[in-house]
Length: 225
Length: 225
Image 1: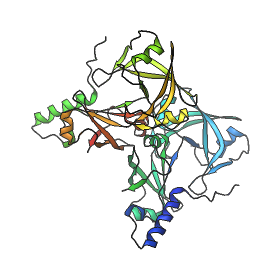
Image 2 (image 1 turned 120 degrees about the horizontal axis):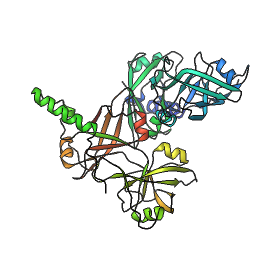
Image 3 (image 1 turned 90 degrees about the horizontal axis):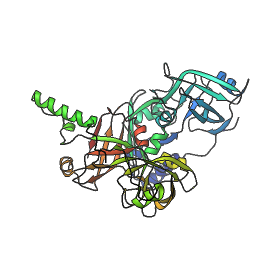
Image 4 (image 1 turned 90 degrees about the vertical axis):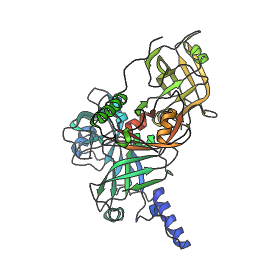
């Protein structure tokens, strides 16, 4: 197993520097910067979560996912393995990245742009709530795996720990807004709050949302109640 | 020449019905519905504007653009003709729609998703302000046309007449916000105001913005100062 990379996310470094500089100057921090943790906003490209059973059907008996890149949330990774998705109208998306580790359900998360390319309307769902969603077929180097449901556009959400929830005055299931700055800034108006003590403060937006506002690593972002 | 279609945009019909119903009931209109004109929001897919010279290079001497579909702004149309764009890294976008009538400059308007597919970063520009932007090659059935510049992502904007500008209390060059509702609503925070007495009240958003919020014909939209 590869150890998680020690590289800090740019937003985390900036948060630490900002706090140190203001403390040194003996000045109070500007309100959006007073949070206990840095706000990290990452764009999630299309991906899937699979069961160990699906991984074995696609890559061979006993196959274990291998780490391509560690993600910001502890223990989560983009796998080296990718699959081909064959949609309900037989159109195809290749190189669909698998995120590990394996889960107890099979779920494909696409953008609406992907849905249009595949020729069907994606249901908007909270990750994990896939009952009655779209079916499709996955193809790997060792075989096929049929999904009877599980193709969705995931509802946008923010991960946070209890300390962040308390700072922002929100609880799991609430909605917040994310204001993204820059020359073509947007505000995401309905973002579900997910709280768990293992979560680091992070917003995942999809490629449509990231491209609508041209999100770059230095684009200012602010979380609003 | 084909006559503009008499079909009213859904938002225009709703505006008329709403005003008639409230008047009948003797009740005041809710504030967002009091504007003199209905707010129409349309998604613009990638497209180009061409000079007559470029059209002739691509489609043959003396060729005139033909109307595929009339657009909401008076006299503007999507042409039957499409071209192939060959980007600076030799990647290709085919079936790029031409919007007519011909203009005095050549301009290709793409989304950031298109820019990523083509492998380059699009400059964000006000339509018409193309100096120093990206070059590319267009291919048509009768030949090629080289653009030395003109490939951009257009700055989002709202078209309006003087009566609308006065109602919203804005002038040409100001910025407004567009709040788009629904289950994955967003607010476009920096939208340039363009005023001309020939303009009908209309916001053009691109496919990334439309897909970020899953804009449908019945999605509620509100223009804010």
